[in-house]
Image 1: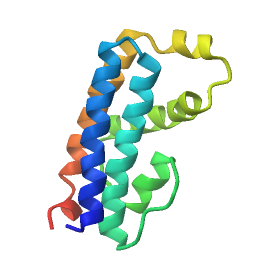
Image 2: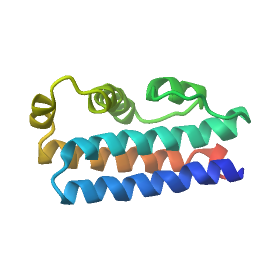
Image 3: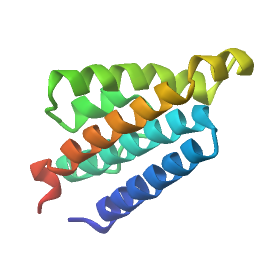
Image 4: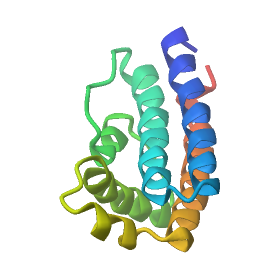
Length: 130
């Protein structure tokens, strides 16, 4: 495994810890944001190994999934689509109060749970085993 790939994976773990801490401090929008970041970095780790190139500077999880040739169960692919859209509004909110009300505690907890499932699957990718 390349040192760059290991760095991506270290950042995944760091971002997941941050997401959990944001949940504990009722900063639910940032739970969603950090979940998006963790998945993005996990995908970039696979892209780094699969393509032997620096991953593109993009936040598009669907694009990164394709570049990394990542196979996931359909429910997790659906979740990637959902959090991909959420990543845009949490990064560039037009109305903060509306955004905060869109992501209450129960939604943030579910996003965190699904994110952990996605990352567990991504970390089992054969490209990361070398």
